[in-house]
Length: 90
Image 1 (cartoon, rainbow, N blue to C red):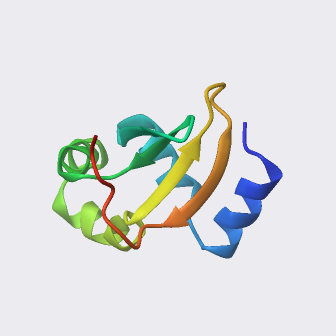
Image 2: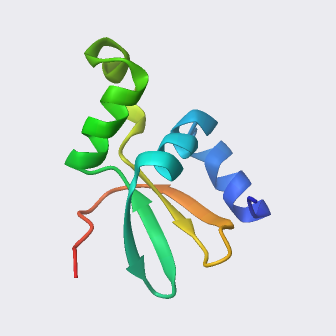
C-alpha cells in the first residue's frame, strides 16, 4: 500500500514504479526512527544486475538507483526521496 504522500513524492521526483519494486525486492534495509529505509548498496546492485539481465540493462536504470523509500512496520510506503547523503549503518 502507498500513502497519498508517497504517491505524490514518487511523481514529483520522477521515481518509476519499477525502481520501487526493485527496492522492495532487492534493496538493503536500515531501521531508523520506527521505520525501515530501503536503499541500494553494493550487494543490492549485484542482486539487481543479476535479476534484470546484466550490465546493459543496469546502465539504463543506474540513474534511478540513487533513491530511498521509507516503509512502515505494516508494509505501507510512507515516502520516497533521492539520496543526497550516505546512509550510516548502526
